[in-house]
Image 1 (tube, helix red, strand yellow):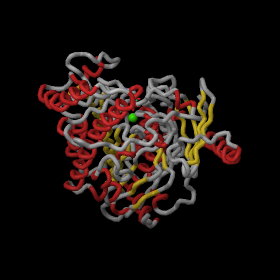
Image 2 (cartoon, rainbow, N blue to C red; image 1 turned 135 degrees about the vertical axis):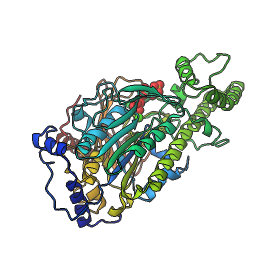
Image 3 (cartoon, rainbow, N blue to C red; image 1 turned 180 degrees about the vertical axis):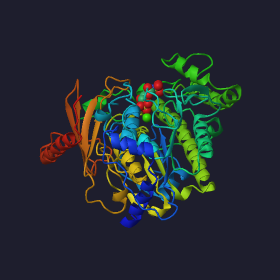
Image 4 (cartoon, rainbow, N blue to C red; image 1 turned 45 degrees about the vertical axis):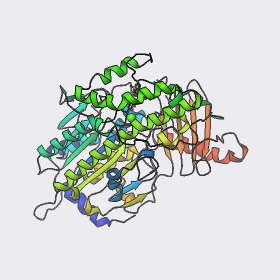
Length: 534
Ligand code: SGN
Ligand code: CA
């Protein structure tokens, strides 16, 4: 890891303080957001202060790290996503606090765990009156914008401009709410979100710093690819995870899942086998027909040209048992990875825009997902569980050039750290009630105070995928999980010996002291984060 000199960072902060504007001062003074520590300090200026860094935060939906080649190149090459990591930092131990969409978004905005920001699941409405980093940045003179998925039920606040999807949005010709007004778009959603982001960048005031949140719909279920990419991966056979046929021995909570690729995926809805004869009368056929029905004639013609022969072959093959299970896996991966490819191409477009407009040097670019995802591990799709594939989320950050930060960081980082990092980068003090920490001092080489364990807590139960409520702790080596509610089971994994979490060691005498230590850590973390068991 390249070390940045402390004076350099101080200079950056000093620059930022010179730009603090009046509303920010007022917020600080009247303690509107419950923090006084953020009041700006007076700084001496020597002529024109250099520009404060910009922020472009790109977040996809359900992008598992296994499908980003900087982490894992078995399935797909993602040169544009990897470029962010190569020119910046790849976080090799990046986790979420609650592996589901709306909670993850609320954590991002507030820098607080779910029980404190109130967004414990996808069902509740986000209290948009609370303090968020876009509000702090906006008050400090940043131009702020959000484009894409929002999913928090209340309208976005803290943005000068927003164009949000409605709920999950649609892959084709999606509707958006643009600053309160409903408008339909034309085209493939990943392209549209990128176009809208670039349009906003083009129209912004070039004399002020900006913070742009680009929230893609991809790669969320039902993984509808861009018609332009339908023929990618032709003939490719993807390696099947070793535990695809997992029997969940010793892991009772996992047996209740309803997220099996071969057990639960809908042939028509998830796997696109919309036979014209109507033979497949599946549960979600009508829902698929609605999504398919959004396409215009040209899009539908391209779609059918690809899928009709696949449907024909599938019907002729009359697969059963293991063959059918393996066919489903390949079919799933084909669509999922095409959605990833479109994200990669579009992130490339955005990076090019920054290059071409002289913005690359002074802009923090972040790539992440709202959580990870299963690509057939344990036989699954979806997320929610505290197992590695959905606890982890991809994270790469390319810092402003003046900071000279690059490399790989193995520190245990979490999405609570994003808001504090952006505050720090903008030269603002991190509010005391944010629970994450700025990553900048860590990347400067100061790892002395960094956390040695992360806390996780998932609340949404009952839910459509059958995952029970649970909380747990993960260190660099061990993971302890407690499933609770209408179940009371514990799971312990030694991630060094058992990276795929197949062997629950809880209750084994040899691990008694490990369990005792991890339980103490849970108590400690619950106290530190003021967790209320729900
Ligand atoms: C939808 C999906 C689920 C998914 C949730 C949450 N079903 O309900 O599979 O777990 O979203 O996803 S779907 O039939 O509508 O696709 S999240 O990323 O928004 O949290
Ligand atoms: Ca998600």
